[in-house]
Image 1 (spheres, rainbow, N blue to C red):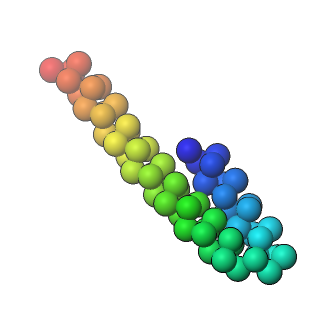
Image 2 (image 1 turned 30 degrees about the vertical axis):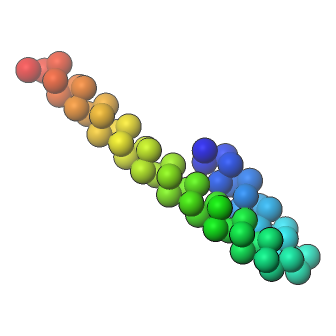
Image 3 (image 1 turned 90 degrees about the horizontal axis):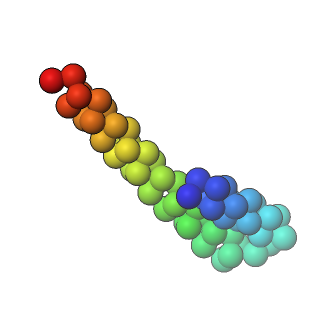
Length: 58
């Protein structure tokens, strides 16, 4: 998912360089959305891993 966010970010930069501001804005929005989804999933997976590890200690 982080890979797709980076791809859309690069597309946004290239589109902005060529003057396609509408495409650049849309690609930027998609990249932001994918990045935040990645961060949320990362945090959830980290907390679930900690919860699993703590349950084995008890």
